[in-house]
Length: 211
Image (cartoon, rainbow, N blue to C red; front, side, top):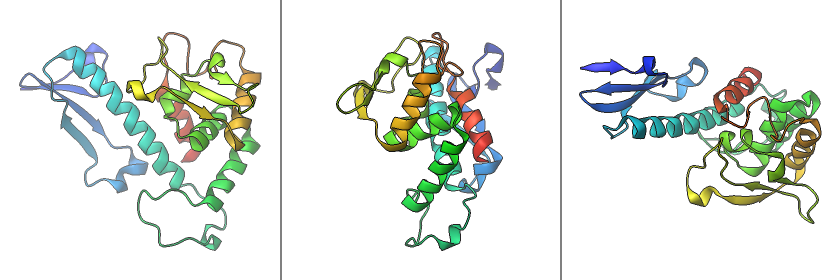
């Protein structure tokens, strides 16, 4: 028996013969990177609560990965003039291209672009950045930094995910802009309300801009 669990309010979780699976269609704009347009794999548990936690983790990792793919697919003016070695899939975006991307989001100067800048320059996961509190941003230190730590509204993937990351370049600019613009205890109140971090909403906003 194969039974989808959407009625329980949990997306992408299904149950087959007592074992929970993650089932999801690959978004159209990134499906060229996949051999199939549908993901379906076992979460290796018969526990509903464990399946929900595992599915949330998988969803966050997929959204982060797809965001990286979309960044690489951005339409950059005069990209054919950028000198790079033969590029293979998943290779980091060349610095010259990244600078053009950064210039575009500095011109837009809004919270989706601040989020991209923070992720791009620090290596944070999307959910980590979207769930930041104002107190996590230390701008008055000798070297400004962001303090990645667990919050009730946003868990970290592992204990080693707690870390301090320096803010430089565009990430420093983005942090300053976000702190100055926020009227709540959260750095991105559009994506964090103190109860939940809406990383899917953040991802959707970024993907809309990147497509």
